[in-house]
Length: 72
Image 1 (cartoon, rainbow, N blue to C red):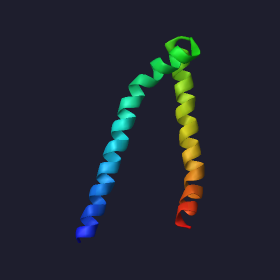
Image 2: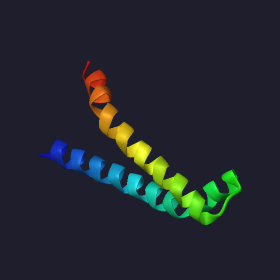
Image 3: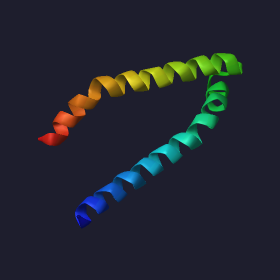
Image 4: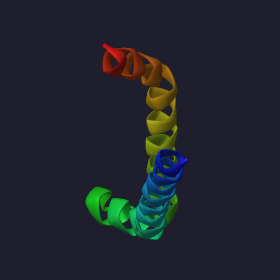
């Protein structure tokens, strides 16, 4: 029972750190991309959308590959 509580606590803390990191990055990303490409915020938001799309697709495609490798 103690191991199960420790495991849940570890998962909760990991998710908290992950969500905090994403919450810090999301508001900064459009301005950062705007500075990098030298365009306006509209063009930067398009790039940000494509980056988020690419991250999601790659995570969907390769999470099973990484999971299989970690099980070895």
